[in-house]
Length: 132
Length: 388
Ligand SMILES: [Zn+2]
Image (cartoon, protein in one colour):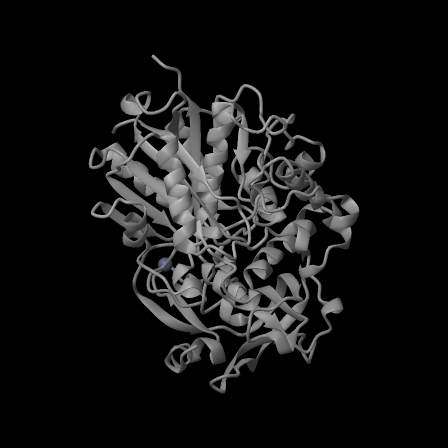
């Protein structure tokens, strides 16, 4: 994986920056150049709060290359409180304790290491909120 | 537009073909299809494939395969739409013949997945999803489908064990298909004890990584009886798309790409789902079989697993699926699968399926090939043709 690719995505990976349509207000993550609802091209950056609930999840036992060290790990679809859904790993949680509807919040963590080239990729993961 | 028919079919067995590369497999299937159609020349060749560049270090399959099947000089190109590549390729071949630009076209799907380690292949297959926002987050293609299955079980109150009906049906049929990868029957106990890959998807919910190639020869229907005793009319072949990422869909459990592609196909063919005698479904995972049955109009939302457990997907049921074993039993050489489905549906319509697999009175057969988690969907309806 190339360094410029990760650099290009840093506002998404570290800040959960998506887009908002200035005409109809529709939010999107990842950001889109054109509104899926009204087709407007007048979009502005929008930073999501990072709070949400689990829509669905899976415990991964056979991982892609680069993720072996984390097995078993939990991936999930998360409904953000702004009404947009996102795909991410869960962290700081026992896989047995994950359930649909579980509240979660975003944190920045190491996503994986590219062993050969020493590249370490950071980005968003979600965990149970520290404060209720 | 001109009416189009299939006049020749070819397929390699689906296996781990250690002794054959992507070139050998495609050539074998194309030459079989050309022999079946009694042709030595064609006007154009379309090659469906997803991963030859990544796994075999070979792109430019159009020219390569045309060269090695003795058709050097003709128009040839590769078409890619992830696991939907093969049927998307057939669609391009059909358009070419319908338009009049081409008279005889060959569509071949080929995939060589066992060239690399399984971890490398897993990463390659994940390229069917959103690279930046799904695969890079650690989601294998299995995990993406697991998110669908988990939510399906939650929303519709379906037990994991009840999905076994899809696996049992696929393997029971594959046992009679000499080209199938897995020719062993499965039991509910084996399903219940299968190794978990990404919960709730276990090994027997998944189609196997495999190598293979399948090909068809098509031409205008008014020429077809000169080349085949049993030409099969292509009543429809319709493509639709949906968002690439699962999370961008309002209701991930309703595959809008499937609904749109199937509806267009029914309209083009002038038939209703009730007239479809059998359905070669894209059962890459058990959950995909369920969701495809529902969005194609064969079951109400949340009821496809029950349909399967009532025996309605078996050969003698209301809507037989995976009649040659499907992706799970026959195997899933991704960029070839869509044309395997069409070859199998053609055998059913010709009445040339193995006796234990032959469905009675097939007038219309449907095949549906899906790329990604429903992002590209190609629905093909085939019809038996009577000599005028
Ligand atoms: Zn808008």
